[in-house]
Amino acid sequence: MSEQTAVLNLDRLERKLKRLAALARADVLEIALTAGALEIENAAKDKAPYLTGTLRRSLHTETDEKSGSSVSVLVGTDLEYAAMQEFGGVVTPKNGKSLAFEVEGDMVFAKSVTIPAHPYLRPAFDEQRGAAVDVFRQAIGDQIRAIAESE
Image (cartoon, rainbow, N blue to C red; front, side, top):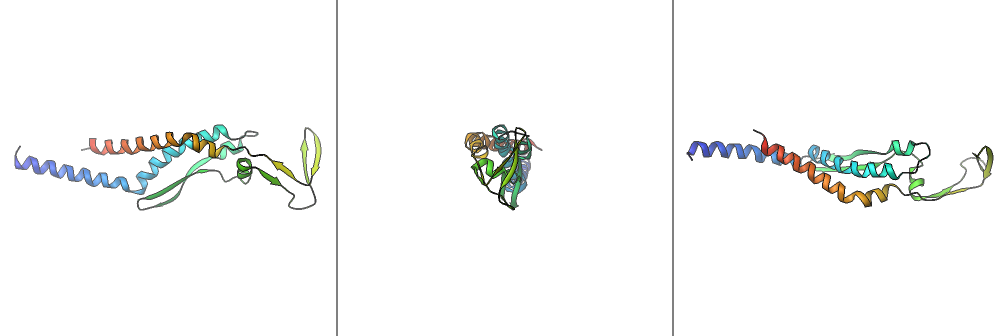
């Protein structure tokens, strides 16, 4: 091996190492975290209570924070009633003395209604945590391989 070849290979290695350092950047981590979070999102959609489908359709994955090499990704929904479905609770009237709603064509009046818990998000997280980590690792590995194979 000549000295020139050794220097060229060293330059190539140095360029690749610099590109590998880019993996710590938030945009690369965001891609991998989002890929893993989608495993949880899809499971939560399967588990979410279904009447009209609005809750299921509203579930999404989004980046919460991204700076430098720090990223956090959330899975959830912005629907007001989503937490009530997940954890259960009691609904009381905001204005007036009673709630009014229709059940099978009949008007019903009540001072409160207890909504039982229908967990969908936490069970999805618990069941898919391992798959999410595997997908995250695969996404990072794919990026490392792409860098190693480039040039």
